[in-house]
Image (cartoon, rainbow, N blue to C red; front, side, top):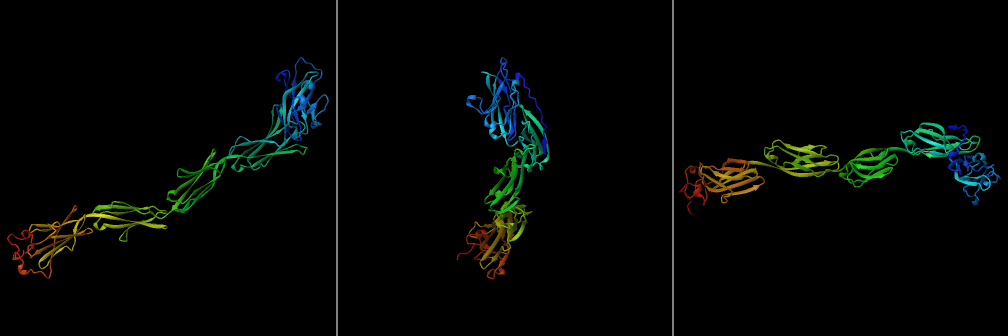
Length: 548
């Protein structure tokens, strides 16, 4: 799009009050023009009022105000003798007698850039080089002014500034590569500063992150000439981070190596952080960030988050890292010791990924099972002595199996076993009392008709042995059977006492005749239970065993 600027005729009028003293000059400190075009340097000067010269001459010097240095002469009104670089290029537009020293230089070339000084010649000794000067810059590309900040979603303007200090040649500005900018528009204006003029073309648009790094051009041309100058600006669009790529949720085996990558688009560069829960594991100011996990364990299982942040905003993305592993050795909790009749709950737990199948066995029989659970419970509403014993808890998944053995101890009152009895032989009676209890039972033999009690402390009569929870006591005595005699086995622990009369079983060797039963004591032995050291206790008084 081209814009043509009409030539504006500016009359530069400067009152004497503006000048800084009797010998003073005014000209723009800095002025620019394109190579090959022209430039007009406006200039005014003053001198003491008491001097009334009939004619005023002037000289323009290049890069030095001192004549003794023989600086190049740009223009000289007396002789028109100038430096070869300015032959046919320089002319005075101002009228010196009206204190106007305006200078025009045509067909500019880069070597003409520099400082220009004016020297007034009022005749005789009244010659003065003014220290005020103008710095000419010959350029070959327009100036593109970017805004301090171009932010995504906020209106922005680019300015293409072109000097317009050559009345003979008027510039035309054209924007290039702007068609893809959103909501773009172009307008022009003329600006004046310090008696120098500029043509300004403004490109307004709505920046997007896709425009970041896009190159926009500004071209300057002059009608009826071949002169063209262009400049380019790369858009630096600021926008908040956007995470472009990150791993999806990951399942890995215990001991594996894991790479988690996060790729971010942002301007300016974002601070990227990898976090596990709220802990920062790795961070860097970069466009992408990789988190390396070596030999992963269950401790690294969890939620990982990539966070990208700059001053314009932030973005984040989370993923789950699941570390797969075989079950740990099961842990058993609960009451492993109970009293018969109490309710009992025992739990078995294990950790694995995925969750295990947990089974509690006794004698290879499954009693409780949990599928894909980290814990299973075995409950007894009323525990029995039969529940006492060894159990196994097994946890397994597709990656392995682990087991733990445990014992449930049930305490219970004594139970007298069926094989408890008395057996009569030729000259002895052997009574066996077997009792099962936990804690173990204390067994006592009682003879109620004789008011006699015998226990395991009477080692001459009783022999005891223990197998697990079973205590077996054997009472051995000499005897002749008394029809009124009977023997009671008593088993006792802290949970109770169990009494049971023992049944008599006669062996084929028994010497007792039926005629002896009920006749009382016979000579030579006690009819009943007797021992050489205890006949006085177990037999009636006066009926002692004869010496052999």
